[in-house]
Each structure stands twice: as structure tokens, then as C-alpha cells.
Length: 320
Image (spheres, one colour):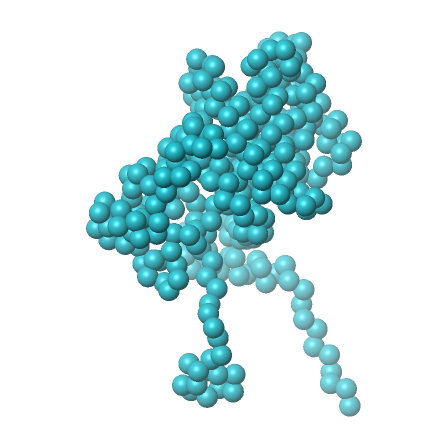
């Protein structure tokens, strides 16, 4: 190793290193933990959890790190090399708010809610009802001076054929629409109807989760935990009410959301909004218009376009 003075073999005065590893939920299953079945047995990431109470069995029946390692070896017979890094264990892996909430439970819940709200509007068919909802949204965008806006709102934005409802939008666009969804739910849904009241209440508690993370307010882990549980309970109740298996369908990210909201930490300390933004920038730099696709060409496009967008350094003559 080299010290600051350049002497070969000198020890560096470093007490540790900082490692950041980002992965999607599926990569977490396939690459980090190696075996999906193991997850069903331990962390339950892929199980559609419906017992969302404070004393649910999965909250107390936990595995430690070495229990998890033993389960991986039992099921797969080999351990991922990431666990060979000093001090890296299962507690180091954090759940990201953007993926489990913005693009997860919030987008799913609001897709169902917006369909319910659209059907409360007077016109027919659904496409015209969604258009009326879009007009209300545009007015709200203008009044609130929202920057992260949907480009349009269509019935297909809320539900694709053969799929469960989900608001197709970026994380920032979903997050910006949470207060709008709450206002519309309070305006259009009746508190006297048990189904509509459940949808209203669920949206209220989801908004409370977002409010607890607002930079202008003091963070409270208790508010986040309590609101997440009450939101999830309404969500599960709505799924059980509707006979349509696609309506208000519970997905595995609800469990991830509950795990994140219940662990007592502040999600803003390790969410990756800036990293996702940089990833989008790199994707735009690397976009091709034809030609052979190779890693070398991909890298060259990114570096060349990044260089083009940077200001040119001016070399000034040295002062005499």
C-alpha cells in the first residue's frame, strides 16, 4: 500500500472502508440471498403478508444472521461472496423507500383509488371519467405549483389489460400526487359507505407516512410505524372485500414497506433518490440510434456525452 508520501509498503491510517451495494428486489432474491425459496422460509419478502397487526407472528419470529447463513447453505449449498466481506451481515441490507413505497405500495394503492374515484364522477364511459379526474389534477397541479407532473392520465395509466391496477408514473410523480389523492378521496368518497370509508382511511394513513418523512417536520418513528400498520390493514380489508382478484391486490412490497416502517430508523438516511436520478442520466447518455451494441460502445457514449455537457476549462496565462 502507498501512504500519502508515496512510500511503498507504508500503512495507511484508515480504520475502515465504506461499501455501498444497490440491488433491486429480484436481484436481492437471486444474487444476494441466492434462493427464492429460502426467502419464503425466512424474511418472507416474497410472501403476500396479510397479518399486518402490531403483534403479527412475523414480527417476533425472526432469524439472526447465522441462522440465515445456515438456511442459505442448507438450501443452496453455497454462500454469496458478499458475505465474505468483513463486517457485512444480513443487518447491513436496507430497504429503499423509493422502490417499496413510491413505486410499490403507493403506486398500487393510488392506481386502485383513482379508478374508484373516477367511477364516482358523473360521466360515462371510464375513459371520460378518467379525463375529468385528469382535469381536476391539472387544476391542482397549477394551484400547488407542482413540478413533478404526470404528462397525461389515461385509463391505461391506472390499469394495464390483464394486470392489477397500478399508477404508471415515476417515483417523484407518485410522491407528488399523495396529497391530491387524499383531497379527492375526502371529497368524493362517502364516510358512510364502509368500502369507500376504508379507501379514504387508508389514503389518510398513507399520507401520514409521507408527512412523517417531510423535511419540514420532526421525524417520528412511532408515527411512521403506526400509520403504516393502519394503512396496511385497510389495504388488506379492501382486497378481501372485492371478488375481483386484480382489485386492490396485495403484493410482496407491502411486507417490505411494513419492515422498513417498523424498524425504527429514518428511511431518508439511506434512500437512493439521487442515485436513481444519476442512473437516469447515465441511461440518457448511453442511448443509441443504431449500430452494434457492445460494452465498449456503451461506455464510450456515456463518457463522450458527459464530456460534451461539461464546461470547457479555460487555461489562463500565468501571472508574472
